Length: 493
Length: 95
Image (tube, rainbow over all chains, first blue to last red):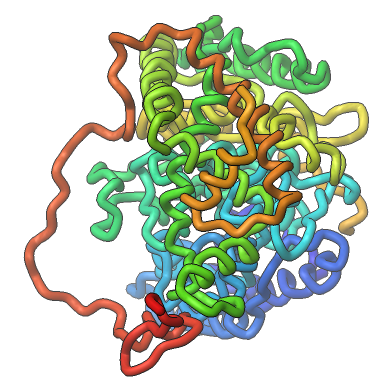
């Protein structure tokens, strides 16, 4: 019985919480029980916060009870809803490792703005989810702690870097999870795990308390099972924040999702996203989804994003360059552990040499090289100029269409260990997600089918700057007409 | 584009990373392959194109010059491997 509570949509769960049909204690306990049963197989969480979660749930139930006695009382919009938080976001008093040994003992003394806003909106936090070390990866295999397994096939990766969050939602351990997206880290795991996830516009969401990776690209998003559920949570974490000067002072619209059709919506299909190397099942599912949008009344036309192929080299110069600067702070002075060292230089070299994993060191090396004297113009400055061309591609496209529909990754979830010896092959997994980060536009991922092996296929909608609303509305209409987002892995029960 | 071992050691030194000989050789090969892939950017003529460092419109973000409470020194030092007398403690900098 209790597991069935986790099959509720967020909208339905909140309705039943308000009416008193269910309690947050029951819903939270169902989530904690699901973790107990499923975590040995999935390993989505790095830290569980059961005691805190039950305390928050009891407080939520007390507030609901008070509100039922006093109809004038205002109840926070997400009160009593159990969620998970990616272990790259600070939550005061709870260990935050970023998937790295170098932050093995880090207990943040403050809470990220996005997390704080969701707590104020009433959520219950059941734990912190696994991630590639400092979000650098596309499979969550770069976590220094554990492998997370894809709930649709435990031999396969969940995608990354928000792989723990995507797997936790797909295995129905929580109703929503927070993720981050610097180069596809919400959308690609959402695709691999068959869930919905928003990568917001750069500037829409505060990054205060998000441990920095590529600061001109980093965003905080949400994963849930449907566009409607994703929007319900995203609504309460978006918006300007005095603690992040890159968050824009623009109103967050109310994402009121209603049924209806897509008449009048112009959908662009970029020909550069249907390239050689894309799995036939991925292309078929995405093209079928685009036909479905057309059936719903949208007008579909081809668009061109001519510099798409350059996004990969641009990203893998700029993000590592920014990372090499951001990760300079891990020097063995402010964070432990600090290995044995006789002098300060050894503290720096030993802490970083032993504390960072192979992919993080690789990117720090790459970024340091791209920024170093003699190579700056050829690599870093050149990449920044090509970034301008990629951004202009999107500006031109959004003069002709309202949204762009495209695949998220060339493949469905790959096998654990399949790409670990070849970093370039792993980077190629990101070829379709990187452009949105470089241009700063929002992207929404959602399931549109399955391949012959039963693995989910996702599609992304990209929109104009700050137009998350159109993405949510379009995906919601699609999900009203289809049931891919309702499927669940059979074995989880 | 092929990096030399000396170049790899130079970069590791700039980045303050202690690497094993095996790591140096692996990164030499892997970084060379990645940089070779990145060389395709040179195909594009960008002589007239300005760089993008941020996708946001340039603007000034200032807040009022008002005192406010922030983290305490104790909170900040709590994660340090060593601290003493309200300061971070490190091994000797100079002999």
